Length: 198
Ligand code: ITT
Image 1 (spheres, rainbow, N blue to C red):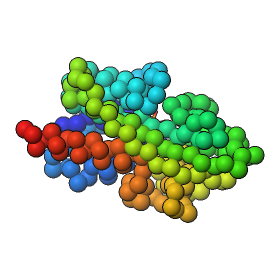
Image 2: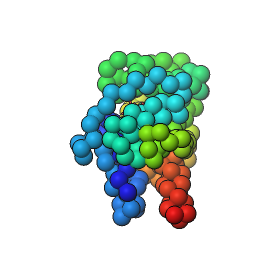
Image 3: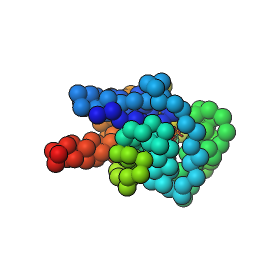
């Protein structure tokens, strides 16, 4: 089947291509540049799930194809869950600027606990009831950015059970344990189930 990924974030697109590499016989992933136009979507939802649905709907309407979207973010306990759904917008500038600003907010905080969350929304067509799949990974925020792989907050997040940040671990390791990998694994299981039923 052809499956549109409703994202303009190249870091996410790279991850998803690797996460679903095993399924390349059955899924042909279409992203911006594969004939999928970039559609501006206002992420006005109250949570990750609502935003994922908004993105999936917008792309499904325009492409007319089965579409999946992911809305993700970082929740920091000492900041009462911020930046959360605002992870991409709470501070202007680059990913590096946001990492630095987040570390500044945490300078006097000994509690460094945080989690990444992904909500995946799947729409077989634009009018269908969305199917939702959630994944999360717990960890802690570093004192300094470390590593160069990945994107976003990867250089300042150490997943539980590891000593390295996601940006130091690299894509292959991140994809074994990440919020996004967990949510898309649930989605892939759902799709496999749907096919078995047919
Ligand atoms: P699309 O909506 O086009 O998919 P986006 O970058 O706006 O791209 P999100 O709203 O889902 O995507 O994500 C908000 C931000 O959260 C994102 O820009 C990153 O800064 C951060 N983020 C999300 N997933 C991440 C990950 O796996 N590692 C590091 N940072 C991540």
